[in-house]
Structures are given as structure tokens and as C-alpha cells.
Image (cartoon, rainbow, N blue to C red; front, side, top):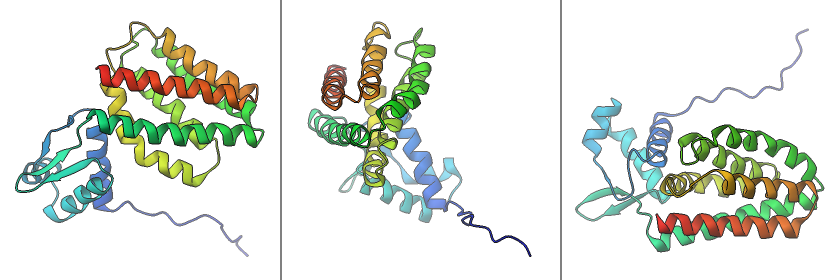
Length: 220
């Protein structure tokens, strides 16, 4: 008798979901900069898709806050206004600080620090170009993993809704670092505080890191 499998079925990504993912990546990477208009007819032709699933995908991005509709004008990529950036960092700080405290509360700080050594190594490898894409991706990897390590599906879900806006902000702060030293030190110290199971220090360091990032984005 064959053994019963506990594997879940493969779920194929729908066309609107695929289109939304492609557009989300383009927005995050700056190919559609803040404030730019997305023209449905041009996108349908470029992506070689019909207008129906494209509209559904664009509606998803509107619900996520990445696209903003202007009456009689169309859909535009959200602008990184000062109010929008401050609000995004407020939400991001709340989620990531909650993740830090959850990690320490569950006694998994040393294991988390060990896992975070991977994105830290990526950051060191990218250090020769402190404002390059590889550095931004390593930075994002650190924060994604930090929240994932908290083991909270809801925190992770909230963080993922912010990811594209976070990537937009990281793109926006490119050019503001003279070297990688400060960026690498801030992330390393957060990991070290987790390794020491010091929730207060990790929280303080993370909030200071967020404040620095906020000021860089607004300054840029």
C-alpha cells in the first residue's frame, strides 16, 4: 500500500496576482517612480495581457495603497510625501519593534542572531558600493528575516503589506551614505542585542535606526 502524502497541492498563481507582483516589483525598484501615471492601455500592450486581469491587478495595488486614483485622470504611483513617509515608518517601527520583543520573550534571541548573520554577510559583501542595489536588498533581507523570526503570522502579514513601500524608501535613500560603516554597524548591534537577549537595547537600537532612515528619506 502506498504511503499517504501530507504534501499540499500546488496552487498556480492567477494572472491578476502575477500582474500585480510584476507591477509591485517595478514600483519598488523605481521603474515606476512616485507620482508617475500607469496607463492601462500601454501596460496591457507591454505585458501582453488583456485589460480585465490588468484592471484587477491594479485594483489590488490600489487597495494596498501603492496606486492612487485621481478622478478623470487615472491611476498614479503613491508619492513619498513627508506625511506618507512618516506614517509608513511609524507602522514599520511598530511591527519590527514588536518582532524584536517577541523574539527575546520566546528566548530565541541567540538563534535569531545566528540567522541574521546571513544578511549581515550580504551587507559586508556589498559594502564597496554603499548606495548600490545589493546593499539595499541585503538591508531589506535583514528586516524581513527579523520579522519572520518572531514567529507571528500576523506581524509577518502586516510587514509584507509594507514591503513595497519600504523598498521605495530604501531606493529613495540611495546616495545618502558616504560609506557602509554606519549602516552595517547599526544592523550588527541590533543582532548582538538579540544574541544577548537584551530586549530594551534591541528596541532602542532599532528605533534609532528607523529614525536615521526616516531622516535620510526625507532629506533625499
